[in-house]
Amino acid sequence: MVKIGITGGIGSGKSVVSKILETLGYPVFNSDSVAKEIVNTDPEIIHGLKELFGDQIYKGNELNRELLAQHIFSDDNYREKVNRLIHPRVRAAFEAFAINAASPVVFNEAAILLETGAYQQFSKTILITAPKELRLKRVMQRDNVSEEAVKARMEKQWSDEKKIPLADYTICNDEKEPLLAQVQHVLKEMNF
Image 1 (cartoon, rainbow, N blue to C red):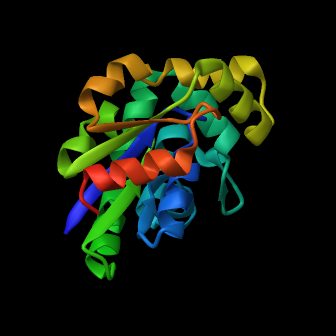
Image 2: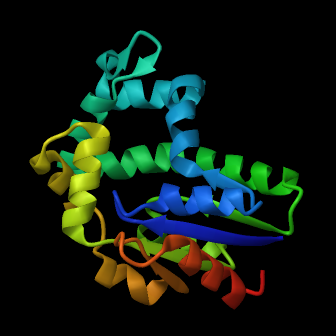
């Protein structure tokens, strides 16, 4: 089983590349989607988040994402604690996904593979990059948030310059170079 990580900063276009791979027939595990689901369904995670932030971190049965974002993007200690709570569960879900995939290769889309060192668990890592201003515009439109809010999130992530040396492949999603051709080139390089 070959496991390939797909990563990149907020607004870089990881999901677009993942959709291309799925369209080409490859199984892709989306770590962020799974994390969004388990924070509302896993009793241990719910308990852990309430212990960290109080009951108000949930509105009924739904995580108060806005409040969580305020905490984790303003306090590195909170962000690390939340990551330690959630990431092992997401990793276990990926392992189950990989075992059940009817494919010799699986992809895992995750935002902070390089920052956490998790990239070392993959055969190869693909980094999706995009110009900062374009990423900013994409996230502001997608999440309907202010420029300041997006910049605060971006500042908590590593720069592309820091990530590039750790990645095996880089795909530039600048809306100039066709993404499909870049994805196909990377797949050819990996002999898929």
